[in-house]
Structure formats: C-alpha cells, structure tokens
Length: 416
Ligand code: HAM
Image (cartoon, rainbow, N blue to C red; front, side, top):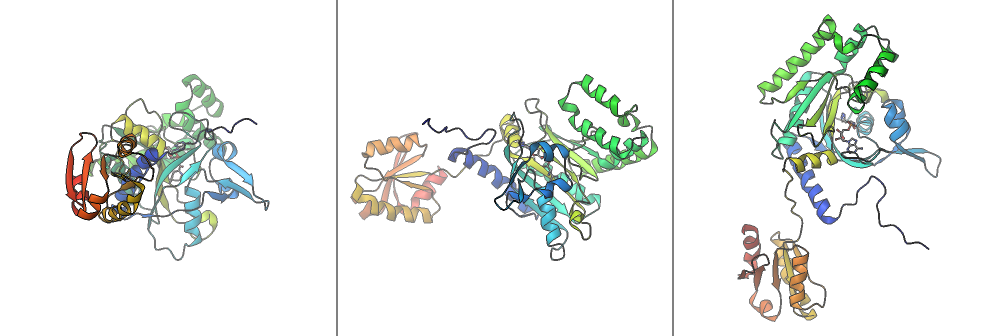
C-alpha cells in the first residue's frame, strides 16, 4: 500500500500555529475596528441549499466555481462561495424581529473551485461588512469610509491603496443609451468585468460582437449617463471632505454578481506586485426581497484574507502575532511537575502564557527545547523555588537572569 500524502487538498491551506496566530492577529484588528463602528458579528454554517445560489447570483460562480453535492437524503448542498446570499436569507428569515438598520459583519471561510494563483485560492476567509435597511447614500458613504478605516487600522495610508468606484445605475443608463437590450447589456457587463484579465484585442472582438457602440464612450455625451456620473462625483467629493482622498471614479468597475443595483466598488493595492482586488462590494437593494416580504436595501463589501496578507506584507504592515507561549517552565526532575503546575497557575492568573515541560529531558536540553520553540523566557521550578516562591527567569536571547517573586514575573516579561 502506498503511503498517504501529507499534502493538503489543492488550493486550500493548512494553518500551523504560527500561521494561524497571524490570521488571528489580523482578524482581531478587523474585529476591534468594526466594534468601534457599532458593527456586530454574525455567523452561519458553510453548508447551504444549492438553490440559494441558483436563484440570483453570478453565472460563472454558480456553474463553474461552486462545490455542490448531493447529501445522503438526496438534497443538493453547496459549500458557500460567498456570504451575501446567506446574510440576505438570515435577514429575510427574521425580518420583523430585527431592528433596522442592521450593522453586521462576519469572517466566514468561503469555497470556490478556482484555478489557484496569487491572490486566489479554493478556500479563503472573507471579511463581510454590510449595512442593511438604509436606502440613502449616507449608507454607501459609511461603508466606503469603513473599508478605508480597516486598512488604516493596519497603518496603511492613502498612497498604499485606491478605491475604484462606479455604479450599476450609470452602467445601465450607458447600455440603454447605446441602444442595448437587457440580454446584450448583461453580456456587456460580464465582458467588462473580465476586461482586465484579457488581452485588449480579444476584448475588442468580444465587444464588437455585442454592440457597435461602446456604452462607456457615451458617459459625457448622454445626458442621463452624465447625470449618474455626477451623482457619483458628488459622493467622491464628500469623501474628500472626510479626509479620504483615494477614491476615484472608474467606469470599468462592474462586479461579477447580478444582485448589485447601485454603487459598486473595488479596492486595489497601488503596488503592482498585487494586481487583484482586495475588497469588492456595492449596493444590492433587491436581494433580501427574493425571499418574499418587503425589500431591505443593503450595501456592503467582502475583503479576502489572501489579498489582505499580500497587501500587508508588501507594505510591511503585518501585525505582530501574540499567542505564542512567553515563558517555558522547566522541571529539574519529574517530581517537580506538581510544583511547576502550581507556579504556572499563579502566572496564568496574571495573564502570562506559560508552557510546561512534560519530558524527562535534562534542564540543559529543556533550555534548548525552549529556544527551538521560540519561547523567549525560561525558568526552572525545583525544590528551592517551591519554598521561596521565586523564580530565576532567564531571557534566552541575551542569557540575562533575574530572581523574581512569582508575583513580579509577568510584569518583568511584559515590560522587557
Ligand atoms: P467578491 O468580489 O467575489 O465579492 O469577493 C470579495 C473579495 O474576496 C475579493 O476582492 C478578494 O479579496 C476575495 N476573494 C474572492 N475570491 C477569492 C478567492 N478565490 N481566493 C482568495 N480571495 C478571494 C463577494 O463575494 C461579495 N459577496 C461581497 C459583498 C458583500 N458584496 C456585498 N456585501
């Protein structure tokens, strides 16, 4: 029998403790920032009924990128490829009980059968931030300002990223002005959404097959289209007044999903090393009412962890991760374990992250073990320490030692 492979499934990641500590530090920063804005976290199962995505969504995602299977009871199940349909379902389900507006966020893992490449995997974590129940552009403004604040919370500045914005209303008006019917307009938007991923000549050929007039060429000349552009420009001006200078109008931003009805936006790294969008979002006023009942206007975005880590790495803004043990408690002999456990309990009560030796290794080897694990401090708990309630705490990087009462150890390590 051949041995089992230790590789993970294609396009997904294993998170070893150091990797996961980094993810947690990033998630923590996001959660703290959103809490300041009054946003509350929700969650759901990654399993959804397949029909949720088939009613309205994105043809490409539904037909080519979902993981869909039949369960043992013959029900068709999909691993969620995005959170927005789940959110809409949850809100519609409790529509009467929930006090609008809702300010909600979530950090789900999502599954898409994509070709793995830089910035794209088959499972990713995606921060979703949505504001439901407000039709006014005040809500669009808040969502964009939050997207900006989230990157600023890592120390990013306006030079590091750009917020590209357009609107479905503008695109629809442009398609109408070009004399396109609904079907052709949809084909055009799909094509525009892929524009950046295809050679210019191919785009032109595909465009000519759909329309003889490029709708985007009509933005300035058609009155209705221009009026939509002016609405957007007003919104962009308002951001400037709030100190956000990196929002630009970009008519080529379409967004792949069919449910968007108003503004659409994407955030990009200004460093060419990262060419894929960090965030994508927009207004979707008709999604919740697909489940019946009154419409609930909504606007929000998704931000993927893969592109975020690439962005933070490129700009040297990764947060320090803080969950690794800080102190290794060594035991001169196995009989000292009970005393070490007692000391550890006191140290943990003061918030210190403590790792206890369980092996029969010599003290010297325990010090080496601590070093190898990257634990910065070492102290042995033997007879003497048991009686004196003190520890000799050694900083492994310098070899410096301090005799400290148990009560002072945490402060010593934390303030070093
Ligand atoms: P999306 O544009 O499909 O939008 O995804 C949003 C972000 O998730 C992307 O900009 C990217 O950072 C990340 N992302 C998407 N697919 C992958 C992948 N295969 N691997 C790694 N990262 C990925 C949505 O999903 C909308 N539901 C967002 C939304 C929320 N709109 C309104 N509210």
